[in-house]
Image (tube, rainbow, N blue to C red; front, side):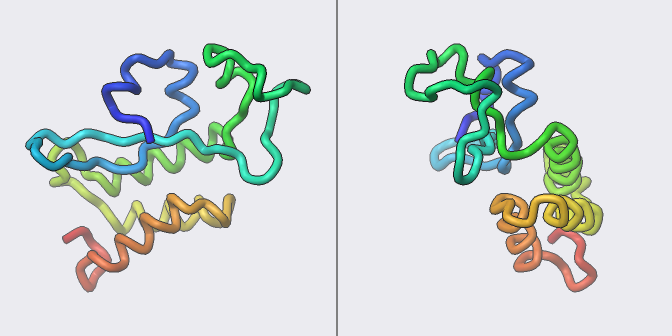
Length: 133
């Protein structure tokens, strides 16, 4: 997981490869922060070239190791996350729209644990009409 503060230190190119996991408030803090993830490829590592990952410098990592999700998928997931989070205070959450987009995401990438986890969480917390609590 990558914190919002750490994300601020990364290049735009690297930021585009990450997905938001959720917004959390750490114990002892009152200010929520966002957490991000890099979609580590399943099974065989997807490389942009025939390279030994063990020899890759940290500054080259994101040039060589490609995420398991493509740009279009990450953009759709980002929109779903915006609906899920509902703005800075969470007051505009639209879980019905978020759910529909996340289900589309899962149709494209059936083993996306993050999308599955979010859908399960939403199902356990939503109002009877599917809206946010």
